[in-house]
Image: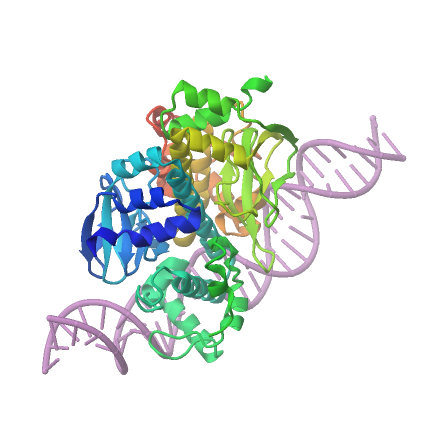
Amino acid sequence: MLPNSLWPMVHKLSTRCPLGSAEIDALLSLPFRLMNARRNSYFAREGERASHCSVLLSGYAMSHRITGEGARQVLSIHFPGDLLDFLNGKADYATSNSEALSSGQVAVIPRAALVDLALEYPWIAIALWTDAGANASILAEWLLNIGRRDARSRIAHLICEIRTRHRASSAPDGGGPSWMLTQEQLADATGLTSVHVNRTLQGLRSEGLLSRERTPQVLDWQRLCEVADFTPDYLQFSELEKPIALEAVH
Amino acid sequence: MLPNSLWPMVHKLSTRCPLGSAEIDALLSLPFRLMNARRNSYFAREGERASHCSVLLSGYAMSHRITGEGARQVLSIHFPGDLLDFLNGKADYATSNSEALSSGQVAVIPRAALVDLALEYPWIAIALWTDAGANASILAEWLLNIGRRDARSRIAHLICEIRTRHRASSAPDGGGPSWMLTQEQLADATGLTSVHVNRTLQGLRSEGLLSRERTPQVLDWQRLCEVADFTPDYLQFSELEKPIALEAVH
DNA sequence: CGAACTTTTGACAAGCATCAACACGTGTGG
DNA sequence: CCACACGTGTTGATGCTTGTCAAAAGTTCG
């Protein structure tokens, strides 16, 4: 198990650009330290020294930042295979917090080792660059979502994104359940309050879009997508992943 | 003039990671086509085929996206030296619009040429990766700003960011004036309406933070930063640029 | 079986949006 | 050189969306 732990990262990066077996072997032999995380434990804190890169191997995570007044904004949700520190650039200090949403595992890789690898295998560097662009594209969609859509659409949009990414994830259902956010986290991800999220969610349920369970199922995917103004292009899936994401089956 | 047109990009990338003269020469000899742009002209439109990378050489630009309901969200402001397509990842189609905020020039570079260069000079690839991370970090701060700060702080924050980036820009004052947004654009960048931006701006003026001119001057930088909850770390300036950004002189 | 989360509900307040009109400045063409 | 049109900034009246505060009900887990 240990030798192949990094496979989710390889899978992820090879959706960003095609990698040869040399690159894959090199990635898999990267030095790393395994960390088990419980829900709510932190992988990194804003301002902390960041000499490593973390790769999420299983479970879910999020990154967030806090304003001077103490309000929290969730910046991204992470699935298995994701690099957790894509916001840091070359900064020596983490610019956001990253926290586990469920129990799971991360591989902690020395940043220098990854840079060395990128220098030796330029395609890996390109893949990392491309991956950073894809992540930025998701951030941009979140910005559009929060800046210009109302509560109902915002929440529906996030639900659509999470469901789509969950289905396309390297570990279909192996990563965990498809509903991993509390209403408060949903609120912090959409720029709303948890009270308003609760009421809006009830609205979506009574429209028949979501089930009434505690962790709702999507009952009407197509209408939910319409409400959400959701088009998965910004997720920049490769051709292989796309059909899974686009099919309208519930 | 032609041979050195790409200098602003070189300047930018070498703040991302130190480049040797071989890399710099390679970058400067990249093939490109010069384009003059007038205010409000588009460099790229969402969904359009994107086989090139554009570098902003002078003037200002922004990128934005539109919801299905027609609402516009500004995603980023660009200064000379910025790569304009950082959101695209490997996608063949542009995921956002980019539009000139003032008259200016861009260099249009075939994407393939840039990738080839990155393959040949791995440090360039690293610089591009790092640059993408820094851009994502700015997007993340915008998300925090729009998601979790009120109108007054949001607007103040954007003003602080623009002023700081303007001062650190490769062409100090050569790029243009330090106030390049209409109130409507400011609104689309902060997730507000132009009416509310107008009123909030008047509030900031009557507090003595901004001058009453049509394109206001910052009168009290320090208090503006406090109101804005502004800390420039997320801009990920290199050490060279930092002092300019941090000094509290008006 | 109790403690700590999480979800739900209600009453109320506030921030921001909406709509519509008007003022101002700037550039353009007659 | 004046007139006009267009983009931008300003103002007012009004109302809806969302936030705030507080408490209760439900859930999970040790």
